[in-house]
Image (cartoon, rainbow over all chains, first blue to last red; front, top):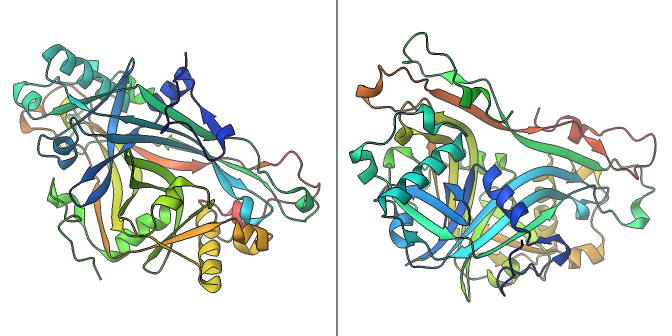
Length: 214
Length: 214
């Protein structure tokens, strides 16, 4: 399965870095903790970081009903970009320095999610996107919290991915220079969990947190 | 020193998370490897990840003269957002799950950098932003590479920061639940450097790479 590139999702610069495979695009959306959503406000473009979660071919976003992003985007064009950094590309020449990365760009028009069953699916997906398995350990939303959460859905119709991997691409004439070249891998790493200072005594770190990023 | 919030940089949702201090904003711009730039194309908003570098109160971006982002943005309104994730906020209630983060939003109109001296300053800053100290170890740009690099500058006039830190903010009535709460710290971590497969034998890993992220 793959996305059919539209005029705006076809990768034009360095087309060899373009990827349209559905599974690869989904894996980037699932791995990255956050996305950046761009929309057009009265005064021009705005880019905001936010948490997302994918369920099949729908991407969910959430927030306060007072959020400008959530108020301005339903029915309007947005661009949602999800980027994972995989490494620093250290070349012999300054010019060929780069990054290894995987980046997905999605275009669409968010709709408000108001069906109660779909809202629960979206809230569960968002909680489990932050920490897989956390929904079943948590105190679930009450009516007030449900009313205090606005949910948007974007259909994954128009998406494409761009990536770079592997060693630097120095020019042939630079290969004999006495300059190191290679890649420094980068990973978003979880440290030791810090219990809340007001945690009730005797509660162990739960499986979701123990297994995070393992 | 601090930024004077404009109508569009004033943090309206959760204003207690708003930061306008110049040094804190600069430190986020300097620490984050990449930014996301939003601009308005014919078909709507577009968000692209790219490398940036700060010199005093100017942010520099670069790329190929063929890049749509670099062609469409000079003289137009853009929004540049830089986000660092510091941790997962694990609450007792699903509702209070969150992230610890530092995020800077900049509005401005890029100008093309064509003065040769400023271009060299910008290229050096961009290379050293990726890996501090790398410019002086590298083979510097030749005329062809200089012509093949377009540079944009955005003045840091309109910028603000939003951040969250610390433990989860659960409701009082949830404090007695037998559910763990705390923070999982997140850090972008550098792994062991991988030498290029075609590296000339006998070249050690240079200081810039040895010191990266230390």
